[in-house]
Length: 139
Length: 139
Length: 139
Image (tube, rainbow over all chains, first blue to last red; front, side, top):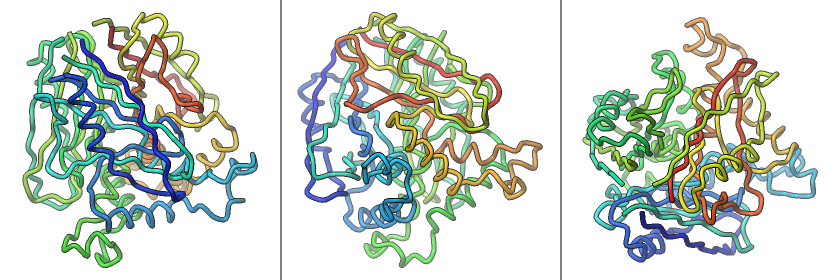
């Protein structure tokens, strides 16, 4: 069994953002020399997501509006978690909708993707350095 | 390490549908000869899901109604993504709630399932051929 | 390839509850002797979740309130599934938001976690014994 473990760091300029991280993951798959296996990509912070969807800016605006509707940032006082001094309870909720992690198949040494699949880092409480874990196992 | 990679294709007659794909996955587990490992099953399209829940028709009606409430198909113009000429922005949102993929344990050569677990393909923008990836690794 | 398969059983006193199961999973990682690999933790019942988030009681109250807003338990008659004699349709919906499973990287023989990541069992139809599967593979 071959394996590779790497950590990527992201610091978004805005509180919420979606970053296409597919090129970085593709490079790590090549580096791993794994031809057949699994690639786990997960947010290491609990107010961020890693998910797979479309690289289309309009859709990302739709996600932003939709998630704000499902779990609004304000008023901050509506959340018990924010009584600890935080203001990011909504980010913990949004991350559950979008997910913590993806597991992607590696076939013939590449991410085995459908035509539009791209991997995104979803940030819901940004403006500070946060990490993403990439672990590849296989042969 | 043993592995098996297969692609299943689904063309639903309706825009939205839930299809029980457990029998197909069970056959692939047998074919793989893996006795102990992981089985990844994921939608390769970003307006579809693979998820595990109950094989009960009433519940599937509840999912349909609930998801329409959370992310309505119409009016189409409410979504930025649909300004690209698409009408499936809601499908990209519904898929995030239901999930892209499942990872299932294989133990003693079988899917290691609880009493009611079944694997479903969830279609939110159907009436065309779409693929599901099955990758099994283990020993 | 090394592997370990174990089943944990939980019986919550209340219909809904969040239980921090990280210490049990850490023990199983040690027991597995896997230094580098993947740890799958999944609910075996379809009205329960396994998810990763913050071990903060206020946040768990926020999840409880938020999920009740997204998929209310009552009135029971609003759900087709409950016409089968069940009263837990809401639990099947809540579990989709929170997720069935997590896949966690194991590095240097330990769960490769960010600073606040903890694994929770999320129960949405409790007061009876339900199982969680832990499957570890790697080297």
